[in-house]
Amino acid sequence: MTTTAPHDQSRFAPGHTSNRSVSPKNILIAVDDSNATIRVLHYVGALLRETPSVAITLFHVLNPMPRELMEHGGSENPDMEHQLGEQLRKDQQEWMQMEETLEYPILERALERLKDTGFPTERVMLKLGYAGDLVDTILDEVRAGGYGTLVITKHSQPDAAHLFSNNVAERLSRELSGIALWVM
Image 1 (cartoon, helix red, strand yellow):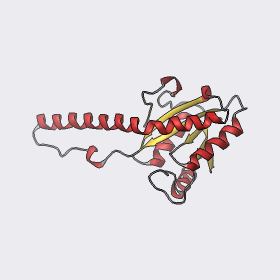
Image 2 (cartoon, rainbow, N blue to C red):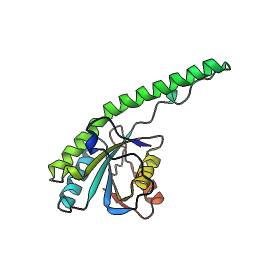
Image 3 (cartoon, rainbow, N blue to C red):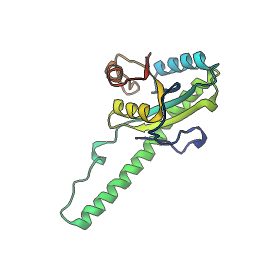
Image 4 (tube, helix red, strand yellow):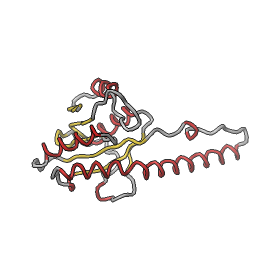
């Protein structure tokens, strides 16, 4: 599932659109908070800044929801079950809002890096995605958004700042069809 955070709504893409046609000039760049992502943004921005028909979406996948927020313990009492469910939904929503607030600056920094290349920001959208599974979240966005090109960075040693490992790149290359995949 993708969403937009409450920052600068004019740069945000609308929610999922499942009937978009695929366009090679509609590019999704999956970003994290790494130096490799900065290098990719500089390369892509410099390469495509003079191509007016290219639109870029910067896409950042939030951390997975903590296990304790996935389900409540349950109750045999229907009223208590309802209360537990309501509290769980409230806790999940609060967590998502906090996570958006903490992670949104990654998109802002990515936009600034792209802007530094001279790529026009009016052709850039910002989106956040919620990961149960990182690859599935990216695949869902690629398919729903009509992107013809997906750009990711490849890191050999994943850590907290590097979401895109060799395994992610390999899985994306196996599961994508009809979409250009740039692994940099």
